[in-house]
Image (cartoon, rainbow, N blue to C red; front, top):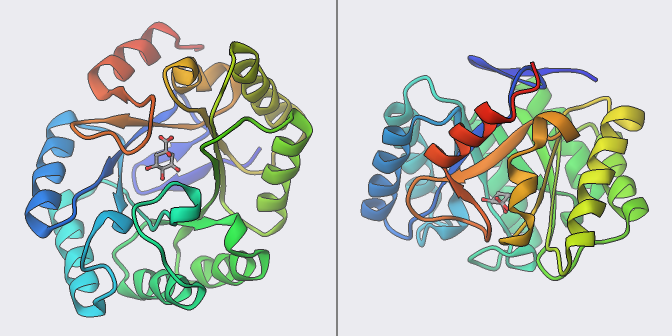
Length: 252
Ligand SMILES: O=C1C[C@@](O)(C(=O)O)C[C@@H](O)[C@@H]1O
């Protein structure tokens, strides 16, 4: 499997990389979340731009991106607009979503950008091509906040992301049973061992799925989302607890 390097971190090398999401509806809230993130010292930051109430004002979006870049210093920055269909805070039209992605890429402030598979494979392929030309990594993503699909469906979705040219392949699912958590872990391991050319990021959400956020080094997930204040999804573990657990579970 290819490793993917962004600034000072390499996905697929060593322990899973800890990513802390920055939520916040206003500039003040974003500043507070960013200060909490810096204190927690994660490996990278995710700006969840769908929380930002001014996200559709291009000038304010560009200003916030520039501010985050300076504030985060050398920390890699992932920029995400999570659509409401996939658990996000705001609805967005197809055109506005495409405009958002291109505004973020053209800003030159993002190291990685999240693109949802279900917004269309043609868009994902186009963004992957354009991002590659600009030195930006694409995390293709898909989320199911209701259930955990069968292993074959999980594998098929990750392989579709890979075929579209994404640098990292991300899937978040919701377990209803402990068996569902085993399904996600088994699919992750099979993807790593049999299909992955690119690094994979998976999580089984909620309290039941917390084990999936700690065991990526064994099963094949190269990134884990942790909280430094406000979690952006159910089941996220605090960064200090995450760091301790990942150390206990080191496979080296
Ligand atoms: O896609 C993901 C994963 C996530 O939903 C989680 O379950 O930790 C958190 C989101 O902020 C991120 O964009």
